[in-house]
Each structure stands twice: as C-alpha cells, then as structure tokens.
Image 1 (cartoon, helix red, strand yellow):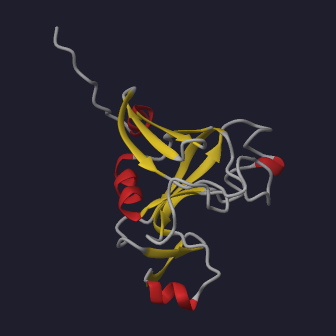
Image 2 (cartoon, helix red, strand yellow):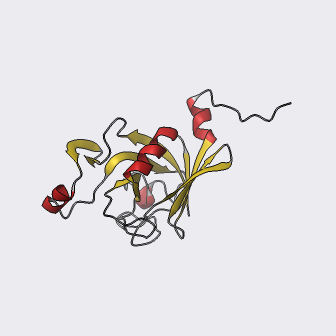
Length: 174
C-alpha cells in the first residue's frame, strides 16, 4: 500500500492539517503540515516578553486558534488600522509622516486563546487584546523581540503564510 499524505476535504480538516508553533526564545514561527515541518519564518514578538494580562504589551503564551483572516487580496505593505485597510501602502515617507503608528501591514491572522484563565476570557483574553500575526515594515527588525504583543513577520512571509492557514488553525506560543 503506498504511503500517502491525506488531503483535507473540509475546512476543519484543512485547519487540523496545519499547526503553527511560535518560539519566543528563538523568535521564529514553524509551520507543521500533517505533522511535518514545512516552513520556518523569522518573527518579532513582544519587547516586553511573554505575558497574558490586558495592557501588558506582552505576547500571550499557550494554545490559540486563528479566529479571523483579514486582508485577502490586499497589496504587500497595505496599511490596516482597526483591522480595516486604509487605502495606503507603507513607504518610508508615510512612516515619517506618522512616526507613532504601530504598523500592521498586508495581512492579519487574529488569534483567540483556547485556555480559559490563561489566555481566554477576563483580563487575559488574547482576542480582546487584539493579538495578531501580521506584516511589518521592512525597516523593523525580525528575530528579536520588538512588538507591542503581536507576532510580526515580513510582508512576503505573512502573505505566504496567510494562503495556507485557514480559520481554526491551532497556534502554539511558548
């Protein structure tokens, strides 16, 4: 009997086929497809380190799920504010005009915690904290903690990831 990798036939099967693992110590995101490493990306997690509390500026740990995918079809570098495209595309000149913006670019994978009391509900709710995997300007460092709690990726990488990650995909952060 040939050894075949099953192909997903439903959205739930597709989500179960992909698992994302974010390493806070290595500052990388590993994609597992059907239990095997299929990609690895440099990321930037929170400058303030790991933590779950609302207002902490930390990256939440534990098991999460992709609750929403935002930005399909937008150009690379498209600016999103409040999860809505502004019609702008990031440039150094735009960044100079708005030096205080925390740039969320290209795509958003909005995370929701799966562990009540740890990263879901109350003062530790990942989704209510608006924690995303998203694109960042090319001028921002990757591979070192620098975000306000989200998981930043290069625009090319987050666009590539977005194409293979359905809603319901498990995301482990630790």
